[in-house]
Image (tube, rainbow, N blue to C red; front, top):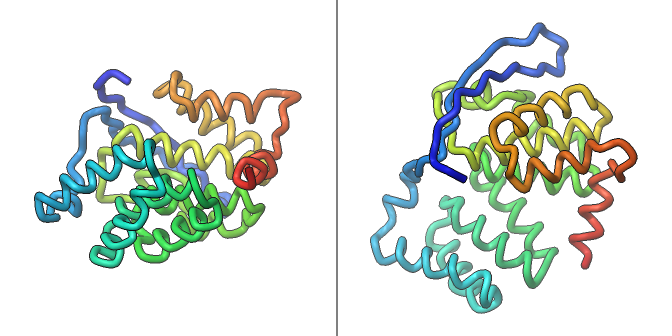
Amino acid sequence: MSKKRAKVNKQKNSVQGRAPVQNSYEVSWEPMVDRKFQNLPKNIQEELDRLYEQISKAPGDAIPRLMELKREYPKLPLIYNYLSIAYGYVDREKQKECIRENYEKNPGYLFARCNYAQLCIQLGEYEKVPELFDNKWDLKVLYPRRNRFHVTEYVSFTHVMCLYFDAIGDRERAESFYKGLQENVPDADETKEIQRVLSPGSFRRLGTRLIALLEK
């Protein structure tokens, strides 16, 4: 994706049926500061960068050191993310455990919320999703002190909103979120996935399909 910024106008979708509230925030393609990561010793930052590169080549070799770092830095969400990716190659059950643990340790971290929400959707535990997001369906409402989100945060959140509302049969809201993906990140893999999910005649019970993928 090219580096750019987009102003996103979103509506708060309330499960209580209140009138939508108009909110806007900026989506940025530029790097954003991860203060927890920057507060780490320089050698640990460099090691995590190396471990991330190692995951795609030898995930099993990266896991033991990531586990050590997780014990040393239990509040650092990035380590759980790396572990989830690594376990995705070698042990799906461990991956699920890591996703749950990240949310338990870092419940306010957006990616921890989104990853756990996706897992709940995959397992058909739809009733858990609203609680994960405090019944708030807009990034600005969920994080009122922020006016800017990285594109990866926007895509992750909007993608999971599409999956959730499609899974519970609320096609209108699923399509509303999908429209945002189309307008802001039309070429993203997540946008293309949701297009397939919402296409007429497709297998729209995505949870079942994803569970099958997890069990491979």
